[in-house]
Image 1 (tube, rainbow, N blue to C red):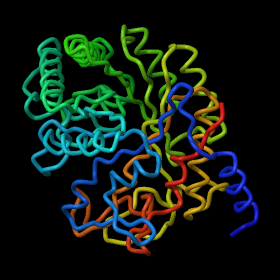
Image 2: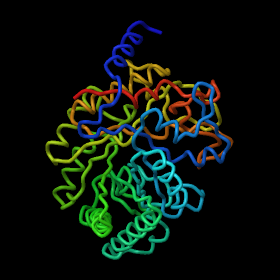
Image 3: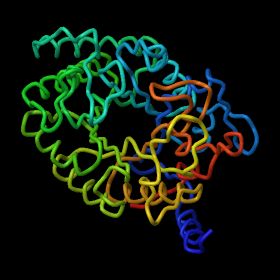
Image 4: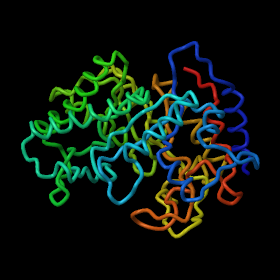
Length: 370
């Protein structure tokens, strides 16, 4: 290993000892939506050669928040429905971790390229009627979870909603949203959470989520101009592979968003590869284009990226960092695109050592300075 990398990690790990919770909470966590499926597919997780329950392991390593996605009616999988989400929330809460529920408002993945309306709502063309359906669904979901004592601490109204939400699959429109429609739909979801929180007398923070900081700057400006303002947290995806912002520039965007809209700012998705090797037939999403010069695609490079990113987020007044799908390891199961995992090279488990925990887990327990 290069001397500079060794010295950088030693320096950062020395600075980052253990969390101090006397100050305002700073969250470090993981999206663990895939865990139930991975275990059903035969995945096992280890730490120093000992088999681990992944939720116990993440909590033991000081992760304090779990994010989980919810699809409306994904008939192509039995996961990420309400039953599966309930199981994930239960496991997270049993291990004393906070929870963030990510409503995709779709039957499949949503992201900056696609925001497909659930098939159950596809016939609805009137915006007010669609907003009511969204409101009722959000409310019913929260009520069902609350009945099981699984109400999330945070709720995300849509996932990477850079483009207009709830679009027809055959006529997807990219670019600037139709804000009259988009604002009505987003505000309906927001109102459902606010109303349920008030009715249940249980606090729920609301997150709006945009992919990449450069997009958040224009998106939240337009959202504010069109009356979308009753939320608590600006959630960002930050993947260097797809962002025009280099890592040292990220604090500028966080500070601008925080100071302009007076909201907390949180990285709700990020990831970095620990190798460029592919261990199955499912192509990896994070390839050589994801690798930054300062952070090699190695176990220690992955850790250094996370330590550096999280320190920058904390120092710029951010609320926390959530890693996307660190437990999505390679198994016999299939995705929509292949057999295996598209993310095992960015997981927190070493595929060359029977899924033993990687050094990346150290980022949870570090003490980041303001």
